[in-house]
Length: 569
Image (cartoon, rainbow, N blue to C red; front, side, top):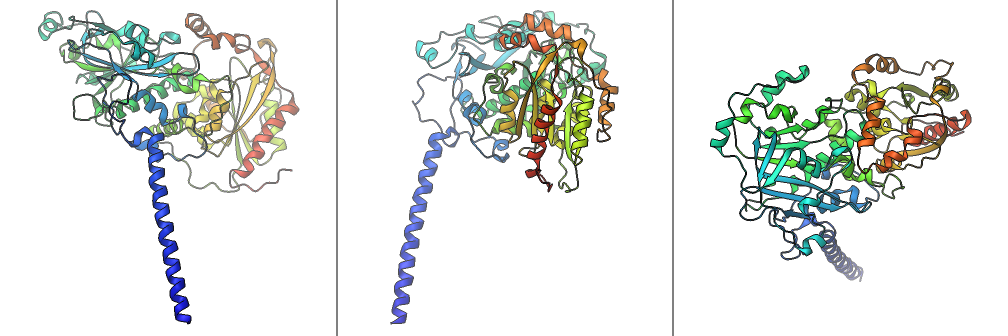
């Protein structure tokens, strides 16, 4: 009897287990199908599913780039801050040249969803440099777009977007690319007028390097018009947007039938040249333009006078990247986002840190103080009595270490190291807070002091998507002549980095005030900048009690984020 019961029990367990395995298998199959429906990377788009023709870009089962697989992250991800943002560009591309053209021009589009504008970037094949005109030429007879294509969000050539500071595809085409049929240079034409051209004077710091960089004419050219060279937020946004441009090209294939991506990294990076169209100085972020181009960037005026280049009329590919102000992190800084994770931001942060080989200390001892870093400003939006306030903060919180850092005065690699070691970043609203993108994900906090009347959510949104704590307070605006740094010296917790920043500031300074103001006047569509005029060039003052309260809230938030064991009260 006992053995019979055992047999029945074993049989019952076997049947139940088999049914459970079959159910799980069907659920996994269904889950895979659902993922395919949600994530276009997992399968190619079915033939005929697109309502508009894509003659130059073939949809393929493009896997997600390896960098995006390797970046951990949890929480709700909004599509415009995820790899879906890249896929939406890849899926909305169109050819602009008719069938008789020898060159090709493909532009990628995505509705921004906020200002009614469609963001775009372009990729051209078969461009020839015309040194006499100082431009590249595309033998491209522009075709007429159908009404359906326009409804689908594909912009005709004459409607490509322009952005403030004369950036974006429309501005770059106007400055550096002529588009028309039957005007391309032949090898003989080039030989007739090229000759020996006297090189124009190059900046001292890069003259020798530029000659070496152009010794082998590139296969691909990135045409770049920058918003500026000194503002970290503007600079990082356009570098970020350019990196995503390359990612989309790495995910897109041409119509040659070989299914090869339009750009392959690192293979094509060795044969890509960044060409700067503006006359601004290099700036502290210049090196980051070489992530997808191993050659040192050059100016357009240097390219058209380079003897190697003008003697080689071989057609090249041109990349006209996404503008910095098209970046999704620019789009909704006047409202609080509900997103708690951003794979594209995480990838960008890791790329920059890896570029400078910034590594974290693997172990943080429990006796290490909580590092509070204050973003020290020198010209505008300075904090009244800042030395006194942080000295008092240090006296009230003996387990913290305060450092007052002028980020504009130290090299970018050092800025990144400071950001990685910072637990609580404190600063008045401004581009100096951009370094929060590089703080340790999920292990820090930001305290933002905003001028009275400002309701800006850009840094709050970035903090949320990096899983950082965010604490905000508003302060009264005061005239510049009323500002004082404070009579109480900073406590011993302040590091030497403050003084070192002061000493080297002249080498890494931001743009002068007058240049910034003139740029804002010239910028088109710069309504957000105009709204800032009332507070942008003033200083601020906050009551001692309110200052201590908001910063201590961030410090106590860190009690649960690290190796410390402190009571809240």
